[in-house]
Image 1 (cartoon, protein in one colour):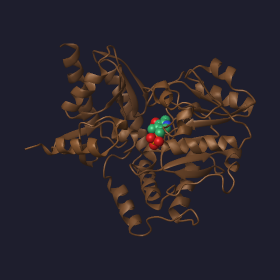
Image 2 (cartoon, helix red, strand yellow):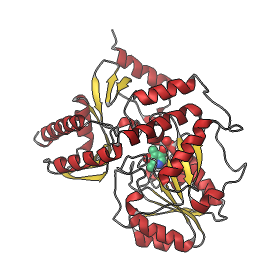
Image 3 (cartoon, rainbow, N blue to C red):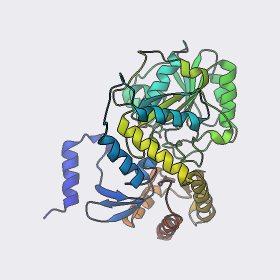
Image 4 (cartoon, rainbow, N blue to C red):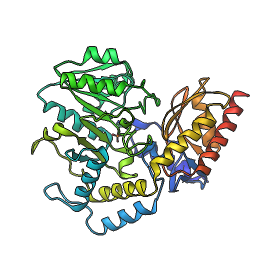
Length: 393
Ligand SMILES: *Cc1c(COP(=O)(O)O)cnc(C)c1O
């Protein structure tokens, strides 16, 4: 008799398109930072839906908020307001530190960046500067911003007017941005690009360049937002305010929700009819996001994130085979001395730990922000053991 899981995977490949490649595991349930597959095996989840299940799986506050909202008002069109979308937008105004900021809600990171791209056209300018190695999403507009050939090249021609400069290179940015630039879009830390941290002062320099040229500074905090780096949005350590912040991933705590937040004068650019989304600001997704933010605040999770970061860096930087742990908060890239990230990822999975390997040298970890110290220590022990097994083999 066929194992149930292989049956799932056969059915998957018969019914779903091949754009992701064939998954080799089917997950059926999750609680906190533990997920279960269809064969009943448990895994410590150190990827959390790629930085998305910010409070882990089935968090009681999210479950109860969603349950209550779906039983009260599940959806309304954007012809009408509802209390949750207003409350969430007000909360985001507070979190970005600008009471004049205004929010557009959508359902994903790509859509948040699409919205920012369209917003930038309202400046009357059309050229855009982005960075190589960046990931801003897969829709044609967001893909035009994305700085990765492998993802772009099959879909050329993309939206014209976008140029890319090396990430972290202030001089290159200065040369490229001018009075015709509508926006500069940058990730505070490259997430999909392998958890790459720019040199200190990079975002501040971009802020200055944008101030001098009148270009909008857009921070794509889709992966680095919502407390992931130990601050609400991944740019705050540089003490700057961008003109636009995009968030998604962690915002809905696992429900599909994205936001494009325009600060200051940028908040006045969109006019009625300029943009829209049927599901954007959906009451259930907003209820989940409000529950997520409430728990992040009440449980003081941003402080805990920074403590976990310090612990992980202190321990793992001295593991044999580890070159350095880079990143911030709980978005960390464990850089290996040898090109063994893919086999290490597999070994970890066989040993009950989920991570991913964005390139052959890097293991990315992005667990739920409410991960416990005990789970962090368990993860590090399993990591150390499997890494040693591979380098000593
Ligand atoms: C994941 C990601 C996106 C795209 O988000 P989707 O929800 O997959 O469209 C955009 N920008 C960054 C930085 C991301 O990490």
